[in-house]
Image (cartoon, rainbow, N blue to C red; front, side):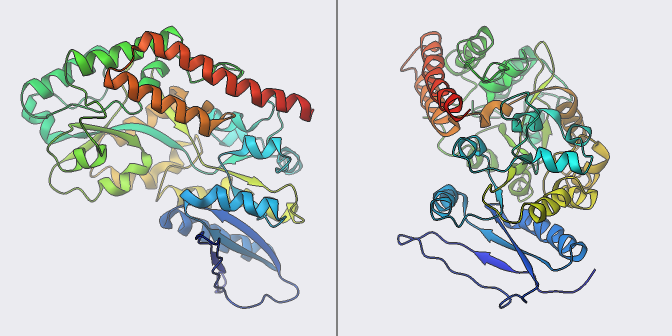
Length: 427
C-alpha cells in the first residue's frame, strides 16, 4: 500500500462555532476530495483511517478528509452545515429519519443493486432493515457501520464470595435468586442497577419498543408491564436493585469493586473494563424469558443528498461496510455489523482472556431475538427523554408502573403520529 499523508480535519464547536482545521496542504487539481463526518472515538477513527487508505489506494485520485466532531456537539454542527449547504458527503448519522424527512439523504439501494450486493447476505438483519424507509420498501437510506450488544458485566469475585456460580445461561427467576444471594450474603451492596433491563426483559418475550410497523409504542404491553413489575420488585421488596437515588454513577459503583456486582452496558464498555485490575470480571449472557434475546443496535452512515460525489461516497462506504479488510479491522476495536462470526475472531481473541464468556454472549446475540433496533425510529431524542424520566419516577416510587407505562405509550404515539403525518405530506 502506498505511503501518503492522510488528511484530517477536526471540528470544535465553541460559543462562536469556530472551525479549526489542519491538513496536508492544498490538494492537486486532479484530486477528488470526499468529506466524511464522524463522532467516533479515537480507536474507531483508526479503523476509518485504515479503510480510507484502502479507498485512496484503489480509487485513483481520491482523498478522504475526515471531520471529527464530539458527539455532544455533532448534530448541532451537522444541522448548521446542512443549513448553509456545506454538509459533508458521507455522514455518520443515527438520526437518519429526521434527515430523510428533510430531504437530506441519498438513497443507497441503487448503488447496492448496481454492484449486485444484497446487504442481508452479509449484515445482521435487525440493524439493517430499519434503514429501509418506509419500512419494508427495500429503499435503504443508511447502512450500519458497527454493531452493539447489551451485556451484563459481572464482578466474578463477588459471585464467588456469595457462592453464586457464574452462569453461562440463566432464566429471570435464576437471575433474581442470584441477585438476592449476592446482597443477602454481604458480597455486594446491590446486585445490579436497572438501566437497560426493562427493554431486555421485554425483549425475551419478543417485544421491542415499538410495534413491527413502528407506528405504535409497546410500553403499555404485557411484556413491559411484567418487566417493570420484575424490576420494581427487586428494588422495593428484594432490595437487590439500586434505584437512581442509590447510585449516581453506575460504572464507578461497579469498577470500584464495592457497590454493584453487575453493570449493564454495551460492547463499547470493554475498553474501560480492561482498565480494571482490582478484581476478576466477566460478561454474562442475558437471562432467558420465552426466548433468548439481546439488545442490538448500531451506528449508521449516510450519503448527503446534495453531494456531487455520490459515486465516490459509495466507493468509500462499500469498503467500510462490506470489505472484510475493514470489518475484521473493526473487530479489533468493536463488534462489526456482520453475521459471520468468523469475522469477529479478533474481537473475541482480544477480550476472552479477561472475559471467558464472550463467545457465548456473541453467539446468543447473533442467534436470538434482537430488540433495540426501533430505538432509532422517528423522534428518537424526544422518545428517549420521556422514557428515561418516566422510569426515574417509577424507580423513585413517585408513580406506579402500571399507570405510568400506558401513559408513556400514549405520549410516544403522539410523537410518532407527528412524524408519519410529515412523511405522508412528503409523499
